[in-house]
Image 1: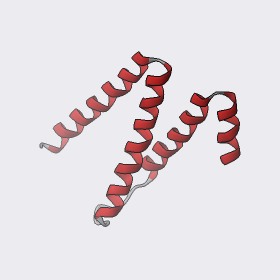
Image 2: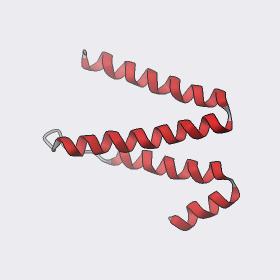
Image 3: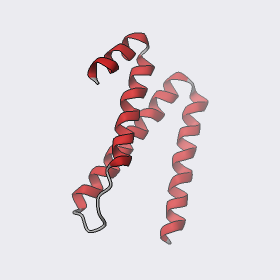
Image 4: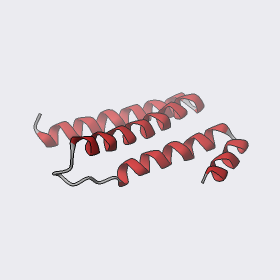
Amino acid sequence: MLGVLAALGALHWGAGLSAAMGGIHAAGLLITPKLDASRAAHVLRWTTCSVGYSGLTGRAFALYVPLGWIGVALAVTAAGAWLTRTGV
């Protein structure tokens, strides 16, 4: 895996960073703690997803600013949908 990331980074820094952050974000989405799991397991999932998504959004800003704003808008929309679903 490290070799693939290094090869992508050698081609273009954005490709390597996208692959790394996409993998971190996917790992966060695949971590599915049970509802009765410890708080640390849920915090780990949220942290992993947040780091991956913020890395992808930061890379989008660096390559093409409007694409970065689309990433921010998607995060705000997801947060709003989550808030309406939970009734907070």
